[in-house]
Image 1: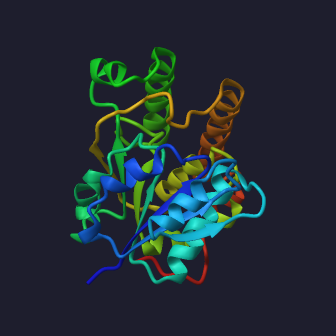
Image 2: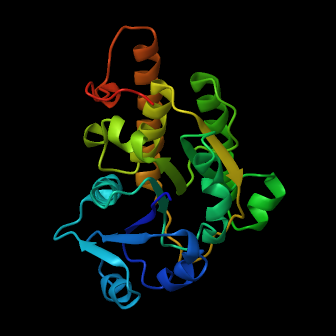
Length: 251
């Protein structure tokens, strides 16, 4: 039986953590790991009271740095499938069974939940119009460059087969918000099978949201990562995000 672990990269998630936990189908999950990135609220206390496996950074490592700890701890605990779920209640944890099914069946290596089914649903669900437009524009650009056909590239609900996280050079990825983009683009470059399922969209005041300046930096870093992918594919330059572990044989 596969060991399925949820990891939660947490920062100031006290107001949304318990709501997020209530939606998780516990019968499917072996472990829930929360890594607290030096929150200023009582996220850490609530996570311990909820019985989660908790690790606390003594200083803020950033969104990507937090995920690096999450995946390291999940692999140490012998997880076969690792699910990354934001504890901000933006993503519907009740869909986890659907999310991991293609991995369990051996059809996919990576799965993610897409919030973009229709424009009307996205806007009605609270996504700001500007964010929706940027999401669509970048989705088209990334689909063309990466030769994929996803409806979203910015999801915070993802599931990985263990071998993905053992193979990709996660330590070379950014500690910032572009971490997710680097991981996915690196995985596509390696040839991993990636697919998506539709999930509801939820934007509300307590949910975490990237600020304007950081959002702009994130989009610029995404474009930089796509450029690095192009250079890698045409054998001009290999970025460290494509330094796959040489001692691993792809399964």
